[in-house]
Length: 196
Ligand code: ITT
Image (cartoon, rainbow, N blue to C red; front, side, top):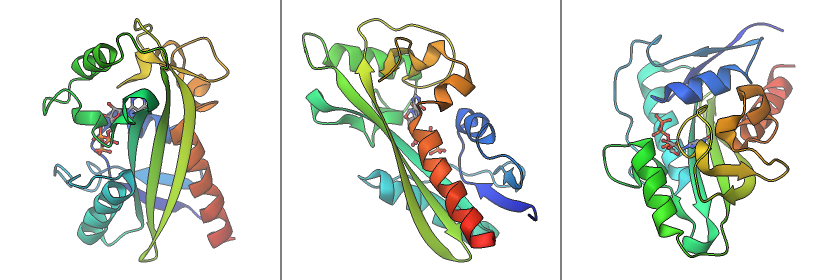
């Protein structure tokens, strides 16, 4: 199969590392840095789907190449699916992972239901048309953070089927459960069909 180049519309280095561990040959990821683009991509909407679309369309307009983006939210059921679409900026514009975790744990104090899900929406623009793929990982928010790996809310999220937080796992282990892996696997299946 010929090489398939895809621009990945993200400024999040952790996402690039995780997605490079999933999207292997014949796919090649072109980062925004590789493409010479240095912008803070807008995420003005109140759904993951709309923000993912905004990111991929913004970058498609600039590059005119096949591209994809993803928007991810942590949805905690007992607090109205917060932080949800606000996951990156839950504790303010500083986008500080530790501040976000602290606020989440504070808002969950005294709650017996700590169930949650990560939801990733991938927006792919392939030959000028958009396609959306969703991946969900169910789990629980623990009371005290554990682990150093990963990013964002990984130290407080234990996926169903494990006793460890995502921050206690290697990328390969996280991929056995992860929302991002599930969404990107659908993208891979879709593109394999398109180019076969
Ligand atoms: P781009 O928009 O540039 O892709 P971002 O960091 O702004 O990067 P999102 O809008 O999707 O990405 O923000 C989601 C936030 O949710 C992210 O900053 C993390 O704090 C958190 N998050 C996303 N995926 C996660 C994961 O797999 N594990 C833990 N936290 C995650």
